[in-house]
Length: 198
Picture 1 (tube, rainbow, N blue to C red):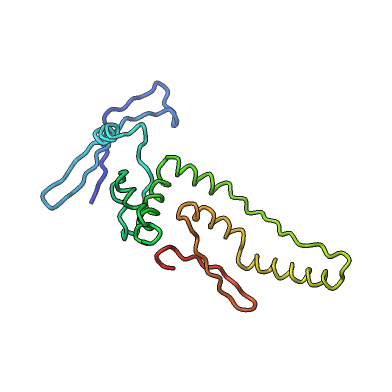
Picture 2: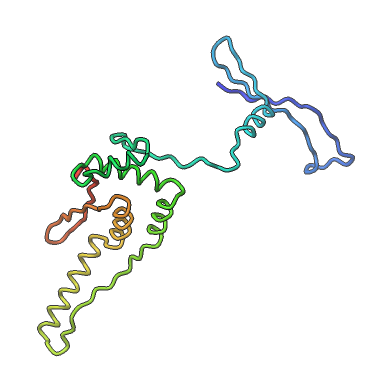
């Protein structure tokens, strides 16, 4: 339970008082009750002083990095990197550890994070599909137009632009982007499977 008490320190009176020019000086005291017998009184000045002492002008606090907790990133030393690199392609645990290290480095302001950020913000989701020209062949032109319609509908169903936007940075960060196409005759969707699941 916390109470805030104010106590008037002094009152300054201006020669011509007006509602906007009145100035009052208050001391703010915050009262916290920890148990039945103890009450902690803290003045605002003490809190401000404490906050100023712990202020970090270089702002070296980074955003929170959340891990699933299943794989430890360990202490990053050349020997540890060498251990991870030895036979990593055949060991999923090593790959997941390497990916966790990379994700952690992406969240920190260094070259890996800046490169990832650059990739993510500059992905071009515009694409062009090229088809052979059948000007003189009527039947092939009709078949080509039908194929173009089917391909355009399919790309819209799987949301190809969003797929490009997600898959390129993920491929950079994890080395792969595992997808599975599900669907029937009229509806299709692309599912993403993270490493360790697929």
